[in-house]
Length: 268
Image 1 (cartoon, rainbow, N blue to C red):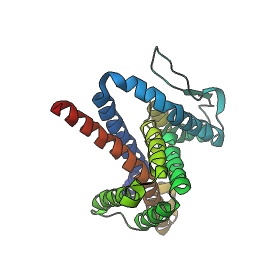
Image 2 (cartoon, helix red, strand yellow; image 1 turned 90 degrees about the vertical axis):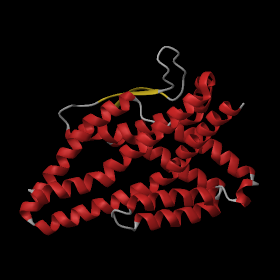
Image 3 (tube, rainbow, N blue to C red; image 1 turned 135 degrees about the horizontal axis):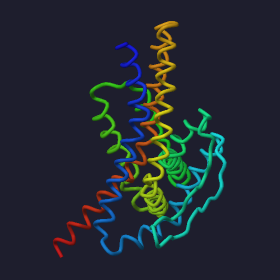
Image 4 (cartoon, rainbow, N blue to C red; image 1 turned 180 degrees about the horizontal axis):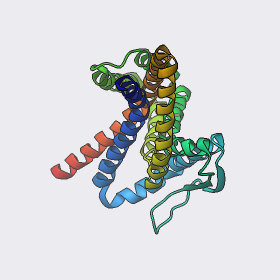
């Protein structure tokens, strides 16, 4: 049973775990930004939501479609002064349908994944040369292995991507600044709402149960298959981590700007 438990955790940590960490990191950076901007924060968040919120909500809608949920109502952008929401997707599902229940997890975390893909696409559009270099770095990260040094390697990769994007040559191009504005507005709206987390947790329980069931079956049928499945999930987790690196860069940029604002307030 220890083998099954170890395999189960090894599968979940780099996949689900990386999404949870990325979502929490984006949340912290956005909170820092909101606190630093003070009374101007609501206006800044609302205006940036013109771009970021439709990406957020469309990602939910896409996952609803993929997992067979029925979309009842969707609003891509609109400021609700009562509760502060900027958009929503209302959907329904069959609670006895395993696919629908697992889909809740992917619907909940969709903004983190889709937002990262959109930022990567924008990099390809505005800075194709940098995109090639960043892609190579992401590929290198994805083809590594999960070790005790993985965290330090991820931090190093984030700094490397930052240097590639904000190079001296790029700083003189208008394309960089258009890309940065778009990427930041998307990144700060990748934050998961309470409803996202609630729905995602429901789906996670069923997803984790499905993983555990597969692990038990593979272990008793042929242990080597369990090892192969675990290695495949670990590799998939590394690819997911490499995708999230770019979003982490811009979430960190928002956090750094927030700290700079706080410092300037104290000075002046």
